Image (tube, rainbow, N blue to C red; front, side, top):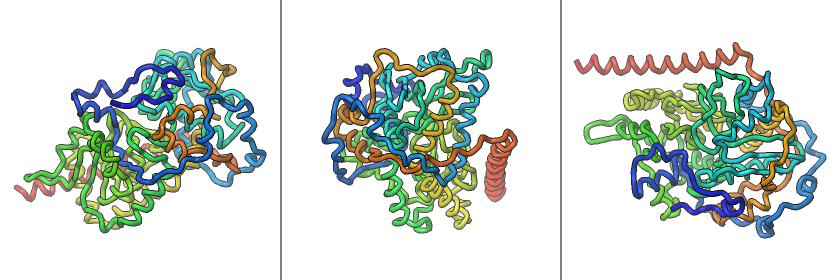
Length: 483
C-alpha cells in the first residue's frame, strides 16, 4: 500500500482519493500497480544525493522575517531574453476573465473540486486544504510555488486561487453565464474547458516512483542521447507504460509484434510494483533512448511522460491527443513530432516507422527538433518564468483583496521539508532554490492576434492531413500489390 506522507499529518488532510479509480476495473496487484502510476514515466535515481545543510536545521514554524530575509535589490536587473512562444497561451487561458475580472464569488465556485486554496500576501504563502490529492501531487506543487517565492522574493503579487490536482479539466464553457466562470488551476486542459494550466508537480520530483526533479533529468537525458546516436538505435517504435488507466492504451497493445504480424512497434507493460521492489533499476529514462521512435499516448488525461519522450532525440509518434499542458500547444506536427491516428493506431505506427527508416535525415531532424525544444525552451528558468508571469497576469484580473482564511497554514520551505519523509526530502534537496535570481524572468511575449492563432491551428491541421494522405496512399499501394 502507498505510504501516507507526513504532510497529511501536519495539515490534517484525510483520505487518499485517486482521480483515476473510476477507470480501473482490475483487482489485486493490478489495481495497486495502476495507483502507483497512471503515467508512462521511466525514471530512476541511482545517485546518492547529499542532504543540503538547509535540511539539517528544519523547523515546524516559518521564520518571522521570511519575506524580507531572502530579498535582494539586484532582482530589478532586466532580463535580456524573451520567453518562448508557449507563454503567449497565458493570455488565452485567462481570456474568460479579461472583461469581467475575477471576483471572490468566482473563486469560491472553484472550491467544489479544488484540493487546496493558495493565498499569497506580502510575499508569504498560505494554504487552506480541502482534501488529499493522489500521492504527493499537492506537496510538490506547493513546494514548487514556494521555490518560486524564493527565486523572486517580493515580486509575486498578492493573490488567491484554487488548485485541483486531479487529471481531467472540469470547468466547462459556462455558455449560460459566461461572466461567472470559476478560475481553477490544474495541470492540463482541453478545447472544451476553461481550467487554467499550470506546470505539474513532477518538475520538482515524484517520490512514489523515484522520479528526479526536472533539472537533473535534463542532464541525464542529454548524456543518454550522446551515448546512443539516432542511426545506431533500434529501427522500431517503443512504448513502455501502464495500460490499465485507459482503453486507448489497451488498444495500443494490439500493435505489438507477434508471430504473425509486425507493426514496427515494441510495446512493454510497466510493472511499477516490481520496479519499486528492485529500486527502479529498469526505469531510467536516460537509458531508454534506444529506439529511433517513441510513442506518446495519453492515459486518464494528459501524461507527464510526454516531456521525457520528447527529450529523447527519437521521433515522437504522438497518438492524437485530447489534452494539452502548459507548453505542448506550441509543438508543431512534422517539426517536433509525427502525428498518429487514434482510430487506426497500428497501421499509422507502421507507416510512420517505414517512412522514417526510408527518410532517415528528415526523421532524425524531427527527433532533434523536439529534444532541442525540451532542453532549451523547457529548462527550469522558463518553468519558473511561466509560473511567475501566469500568477502576475492572474493577479491583475482580481477584483477583490486577497485575505488569509481562518484555519489556513502559513507555508514555507522549512515547514514543508520538516514534514517530508526521506524520499521526498531527497528531491526537495535537489530542487531547492538556494538563492534569488539575479535577473527578472524572461520578457513576456504579447498575446496572439486572432488571425495569428487561427493560422497556427490551420497550419497544424494541414500538416496532420498531409501525413494522413501519405499514409492512405501507402496502404492503398500495399493493397493493390496484394490483389
